[in-house]
Length: 154
Image: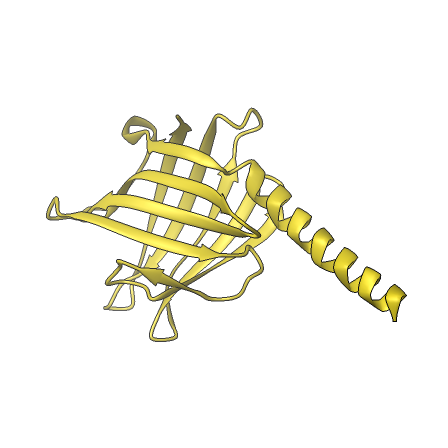
């Protein structure tokens, strides 16, 4: 009985450490570098993105401006385990899932009503001072629009 409890506790501890290590390189404040970014016409631009370690979760806060210059703020809290977690503040998504590819890469999928609305990849630079987010958005008319956003760590 004691060995089961110890093994279970060790498993929870290792899972927490793994999530923390996955998030460590991303944690911090990131500001959009528009000069290095490419957006299709009318795209929403995430001006700042903040990753925060929240216990064994990762919290992602986004401040954006839409095509009409209207400010938006979204929040997502979850694990980079490929499972859907709720998003608040967005008309285009109600869940998002992050998947850790390696220590410097995360894939994500956004959904609205269970339907995929966007997919992408976040890649940290080798020095950890910038990150590039490539996003494929599924438009309402079925067309895809791709953006590449570069962020500098603040």
